[in-house]
Length: 623
Image (cartoon, rainbow, N blue to C red; front, side, top):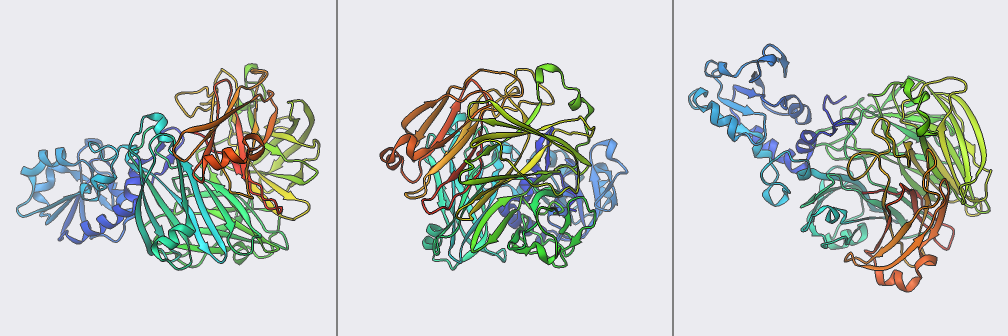
């Protein structure tokens, strides 16, 4: 496993990781290494050196390490015993690598200590070019690294389309642009370019077929690195990606933004049915190769991981049929991915009867343990953590769930399923038991024609809970055989009291009691739909006051509708029926829909619904 700090739920993302992982930083660090004559000493004032050499290990041989804080004297750094920086004159260093950004102040204090002729370098040489910095005064401002990766493909009759909006403008950003780099399957750079973003809440759309034509590219399958510059409010690029057929017309799928920090383990990967192939897209997020044996698959709960006995090059993509490592394992078994912090949240693709569908695995937490306080929540928190998901019309769809262990220390899942109709009336309640980590439950929800269900904790048979409750949800069209799937985790919803940082808020401290969700629009023949859910851990406002604001590609509102959703109810909304074809045409190809509510926190799923039976579905993102 890469010994790097990436994301901590208490402190958020580690900007040092992002600064070192940026493709341009990788190139600059390579040039920096080349100009350092030996012996090379490292000054590690900010405790960055270990991460630097983990992320970029092909550097010079290190003769020793110097530190500033007396508490670090004698600590092990880079295989050396750290010495006080006052020892610098006696080191005989030919080069000093200052493992810090914004290092001018440090250098100003120690220049008189440098051995004669010593070459000095710092990580300021790996600082982003000025045109890619949001904050020019501080290299490690998180807003300088509003970045993410996206699965991106234009090959074998399948294309991808990334869509989002300039949500940063709502936080005061005025001049946003995107710096983009496309890597092919081998990790080679296919194209690098910039795109200006319309001021205000304009739409953003990047189409793989258009990119391929623009740069005269061959077919490709790889990843798109996205860096947003000039942003405010959010340091993560959020998006939705549609996968659609440009040839045979059989496939349609979507997936949402990746978690921007790599994790040690991921879960929520289904084993294939006998007539399916499940491909896990392993996309190296770093400029150094993934060693052979560093990636492994395991049946969830088996603790018998099987390693991939080959390396994956820098920024390269490897399509792994899960049957290569786990032959004979079939649905409804689940698979755990041990990724060693080499991958930003991977995608998986299921092929069945000539149709493909894509989804993502989720971060499996290593920092959680069962919390007895969850079983003894105060009454104002009601049912506590809820995991809501749609139940699509049973006359056409099957809705199937698989509760998913999503923490390394999660030995069991004590869960219940509550089912509601559109009006918020509970129609059924199913205690699913104290599910073991290696369970193979797959349950079809068949208690309501249309509505939603919520997975909740239920401790009648004991068990532990950590608040990181997840489930896979699969939707199957009973006529066409087409399918879609998604997964998400539980939160506490719509209560003014708080618990462990819940209900979460996109803006400010909890409790989060408002909604701002993104819905992309479809094309002619594949209009968008959304299933909005009003989950409530305890009683809240009887009905929502939800505004649906249709924006064109320039961010102007061209139409607006209001809907009222019952507490613990939901609404299935088809944009073409709600707004009409003329308004959607006016919104244009970069148009999008804002779901806004200041009275309650909604959760939503979105997708496209083609006339020929194809459809897609995933959960929406907010900002």
